[in-house]
Length: 362
Image 1 (spheres, rainbow, N blue to C red):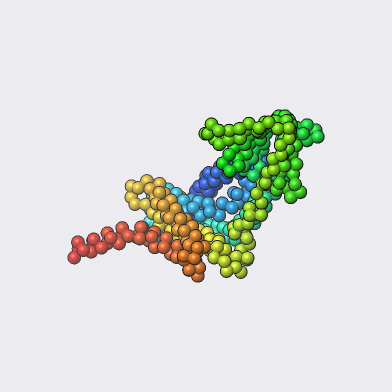
Image 2 (cartoon, helix red, strand yellow):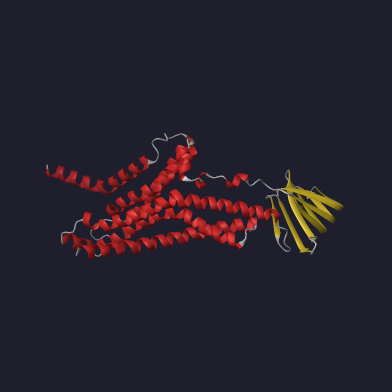
């Protein structure tokens, strides 16, 4: 009978966990796709790079989504068992809560081990790959020629448009807009040439037979200059800063470092697997329902606990990086504070009821 009950509880919790995790991943994926497509449209990423960036972003966020999925999965599954009196029937047969929690612990150990591998090894690798892909895509975009019928942005302050491109690379019917010291310059030319320096950081656009309009937006003062030849140099930003991130460093490198920012990142990585264990411990008392309560009565409480937990971890990480919190203390105080808060939240009403009963009896 014990194995049958274990399989039944495991099936209920596993189904709820997978459903909640899938829904959260879809929400996260929607946000991730929007961000990647925005970057791709701005920097002309290739299609293959866009798909890989979406997949890598999903791997980076999976370790954050799985703990709350497990918390809500346990609360929803046990809430249904309490609501349908199946938990009462099992306890009437002599099966205690500790015995019914065994399959949940088995699932929690497996999920925690996967999250530890994900946050300590796979996620940093995925982050490094993401930054490398972005840098490579930006580098390729710097050397890419201007496409006809499409606006092209250089360095964030110059926009170029060409109606057609001849086989020899000559641009025709060209529009160039850029901002310099608060003044906007718009140039129109019949034809132009686009040249790129060897390093890819300097683009030179030479316009022929056109006009240039200069002025301040909102001001009636502007001037028109007609030219036979006009050269516009555009400096694009350096890419070296974009491939630097503590989240992309291997865990073994963080262990050897004394830098506070890197140590904060290390504590963050260790906090996520511990968070999964703590949330599993808290999910069992949080899912306990009183008679005549709805099966979803404790979901809001579980969500509140998770948001409090996650915000405390993020705050503690910032405090460690700034030196406000001793690095030796780490984020362990967050786990203890959340356990104490849930204990007061769940057991506090029972203690108060017993205290009032003793006082009335006295």
